[in-house]
Image (cartoon, rainbow, N blue to C red):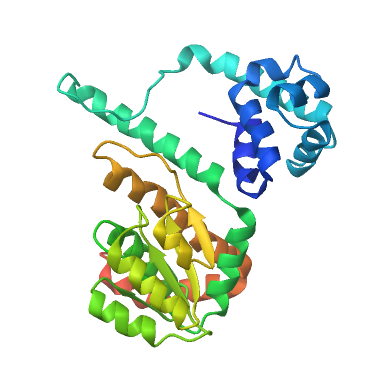
Length: 290
């Protein structure tokens, strides 16, 4: 499990400049070497300037390079203590030789890796704009097809609980009609793992044409659907054997949870009250505890 400086870098990664990302990539890939490298040597090995390293340390919340290097040493010390207890797993690959008892561990390991990749690709500045856009929306329309419908319905449920006016359409005719009726006061959310699902791409194009604020959740930054995104959230860009449907859903569900929790945190009293009200409304649908 990654922790300390690694999680910190991955959390801030989406908002770093291109040169800072190169330095961050080198640090993540050569953690053992960092404790021995001076600022000058790190800059040379990662192919960036010394001021870039300094900017990176500031972006990560450290006073200087020395403090960052200390954090690396601290993480390595903690990892050393846990090392013997670890069972390394390598990505999700399935063959005739795989044993049934190995599958759960492989699935968990791949899911963990994809979540870490999602965090690494995540932009906090875009995230804040997404939260603000949803809060200000008159109507929120959610569009998806096939496997992405599970994610879309989860987002719909969470937004309804918080009191938002929102709808989900997976029928193209309904999508097209609703998208054409949106205004600049509305938000359209398109969810597509590949970014090339024809119906979702076309309806997001229509929503943008109508003037609505468009939010896209996809895996590939340069996919077709990203052209119609005012705000783009990317998850892991890793292609997996048969696993696209499985693991895309996992990382996108995590993004939905981030949005849900972010909305609550942005106005806690308002949304906690609304959540409690709507929870009480459907309380009679559950059996009382034994």
